Image (cartoon, rainbow, N blue to C red; front, side):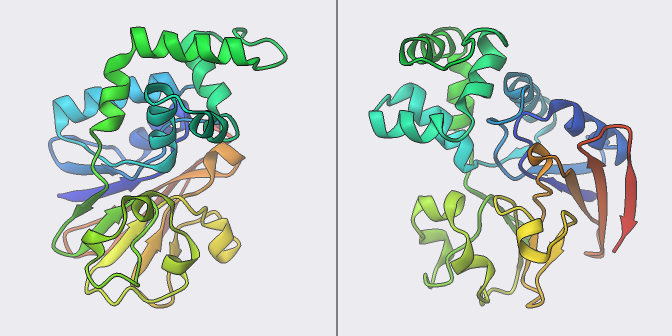
Length: 249
């Protein structure tokens, strides 16, 4: 059985499905693990969530929580000024337009229309919010830990770290050794910020693997393939759908 890990889809539904096609994903043979951030900034967040609900229900796909998924869930259901401002600054408009229509806001996302759009999602797509709220923070196998942002090396037991670290941590995680005997596969921090390439980043410390290709920022969507011998292969769909490549690692 192959393990296929993908992170930070961010509403890039077309690229996600091209990538599944490219790797020849077979639910009966492969374990698909999605490492958070399905919404915001891209144009098809609603469509992505609908597909993920189906994939999890029908095929047992592992769907983990990302910080953008948390922001959407909390801004709509908890509705505080702080949560609304944070989400608004991080791609809420594109997500709400995927539910309410591309011309819903016009030139400006006015506060009244923002509240109206959130109410539409809350009343008509509550099952989407419940789905996001149900997502696990990590997934552990015999050889790997899958998590959206990372694990905090300052905590002796990473499973007991604050929930925010699972979905928000950056440099304290990727710049320091984890001290764990399993490799951590993560998204959140685009690989281009780790080694000046959108390709999958393998830490020189050999304890972590960053798979966020920055697709929504015009780069690429990555898939890390792990075979039964824990050998790796990278599959890529660039943001330009007409280009495809596959690289042996």
